Image (cartoon, rainbow, N blue to C red; front, side, top):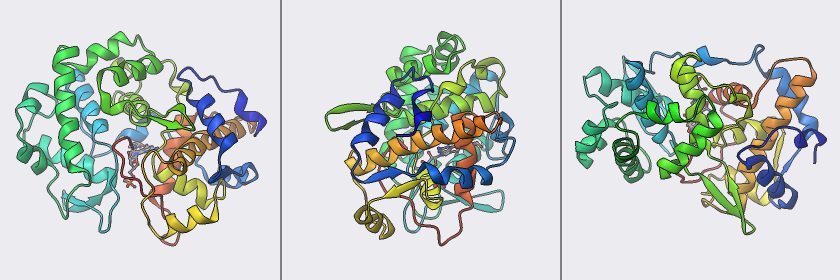
Length: 327
Ligand SMILES: Nc1nc2c(c(CN[C@H]3C=C[C@H](O)[C@@H]3O)cn2[C@@H]2O[C@H](COP(=O)(O)O)[C@@H](O)[C@H]2O)c(=O)[nH]1
């Protein structure tokens, strides 16, 4: 195990659990010798909060924006499929995360108050489905519908209709906000079990914090003093990038299954090892950048790797396919 990996703080007990997984792992290993090549491919400076500024994102009043970002990240999972679900907006066609962002932006442009939990609670299944109209069907549509209802219910019953209430209760700590979000909105409570041990990833809850910081440009409801304590957001694109650069190495049998686009079951040892290795690889990359004297944090390395993943060459090995509402 790389000596680096014992030094980052671990307030959510994610790093400790991931280290235990990787020490017992059968399917996935980390090759730290591949880090310098990948580090050379990252932009410097690393992405910071303005990276969130994008025409497909939306801002209203502060309270509306906070509710919108919560809804966006409650739906921010599992966009893969053949063919991929696509959405057209402003004369362009999007897939993946950007198709989701386009869906919400399109509805908001039509005057639908998606930031209003009372409005959300009155939407029928068919009306929620219509939000995601496009080429093909958004994967895991049933879960999308249930997550919309979960957000509406949680905001009304626990936040007096406003996510800003929960953000205020976190007192400027993204770590505390993660704890509050996973306790209030069950779909964010992203915890796996490996060899009988609890392995938290909290991927969408942690990404929600950096998305808030981006949406508010680090001020007001997006002002957190501890974003650098967050781990990477263990999705399906980062492992693809890390594997393409040789940092993540898969057992030949697992590599063959992923390359054949076979589904990897949610909660399987293979899936948990991939996610745990992703978290630790980004920590190691962060620390190796810091030893070069470069300012780095896992969330900023994550955003950089995710952007790299948006432009991988078509012959790059595919990402693993797990049907999950957690990422
Ligand atoms: N680890 C990590 N995972 C991220 C993001 C984002 C979007 N954030 C960007 C938006 C504005 C800022 O610039 C942020 O960089 C989406 N995802 C995940 O990717 C997957 C979708 O991928 P594809 O099928 O190719 O669209 C899916 O699991 C989705 O949840 C991130 O930043 N980090």
